Length: 348
Length: 194
Image (cartoon, rainbow over all chains, first blue to last red; front, side, top):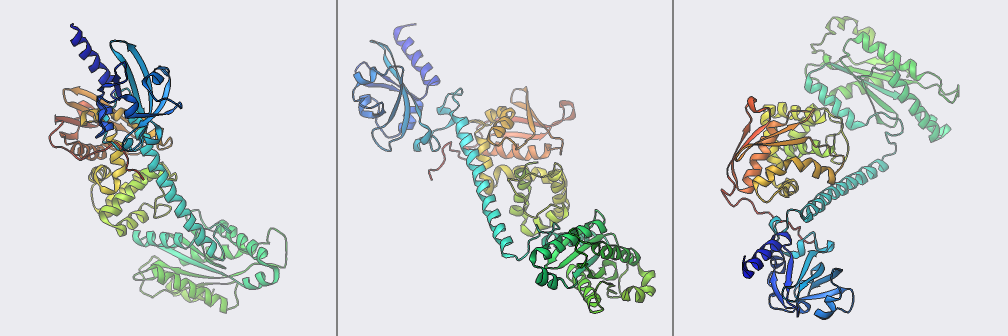
């Protein structure tokens, strides 16, 4: 290999291995620029310039000439482009010999990595062994994860404010909220599964709150929530719809007799003494029930209104009672044979 | 299961078919909330449940839906981030295909609990690869087909991407005809400066 051919082969090897490098003459004149550095520099003229004119050494201090730079051989330097945007770089100068000058190897400092110093670099401007592209990937992925986290926090913050605006939160008693109720009703109606809606209005709850304070009221609500969970099946949905109102959705329960049994179980569970043993405070409720199969075209609003009306009827009759709503008389459910007994159910 | 994976189905149904259809899917899949939370964890079967609920609400076969989802993840404008992350895989389509083995490791580095299914790539001949993806929750071959076709377009490569014949084992067969058929979509490594 001739001397010239050897120099070209060496240059090609360094261009591939270290695309961001410059070859310097003994006096610091830039003789060659690797393809990555050329693209990073863009319109900035590097070739033929003195290295200390093309770059500013920011660390260590006081590096103004090629002779100063040579004292830093093999050590880390901080530099930036002297012209245009002062893109920050890390560098290391390695001298060869008098004839072949020296090599300045450069890389982007972390602070200028995300936007690559504003240059249109591509994966081809980095050696495949250089993890810079993987770093960029991580910066990208990290930004995506952070954006999602910020969205989550914003949503949680909104949800927290909403919850704080409500006088009672469902976290007090445990059951689901109104949205859970709407969702389960929509699902059952969509699937055409028969079910019953049981509404529970606590009797004289306001007096408990007024006479014994809100802590006592909260204790009653928790007691009722637990009683409800014991009285219903695992497949049933229990939600608290208002201050002293609960609703149970019992999937598949359309037999009036079975519904009656469940309502009685609910009344007896909540009538159990409170855990704090205050025997004066016996909890009772007015319970109303609507059965989906008693309607030609059941819908959520209608069933909830019917259960509410039945509960109101129970309350007017003195409370501590259960009432079953007769429906619209056009249902096609399995309880048809029970219609004759409806009168008895309806007076509970 | 990571919320991001389930969330992708919500984004797909909402962006392509509208929010009302997504509400139907959420009800049918019995999701705990109608909005999937990308940074929360969900039960392991939620993805499969949501996909089959979407297939029945939208009246499409499950595989057709998965393929559309794969295309959507790569090419829809609201999924620019995913497409960008995928393009980091390689400078051209061949490099990209050969980097798919590393995809799970890369994703793991960025988000250790994401739990993406592992992808295996086998070079079976010149310009011929089989790509398979084993996931206990669901067969994702159709999703992979949609995503790889869209990535070939993105790179401007001309490739045939279809289900591998059973003799080659399950998965996707990629036949590369030309890696620079069109200029493809532009891709910049750098991020815009804030």
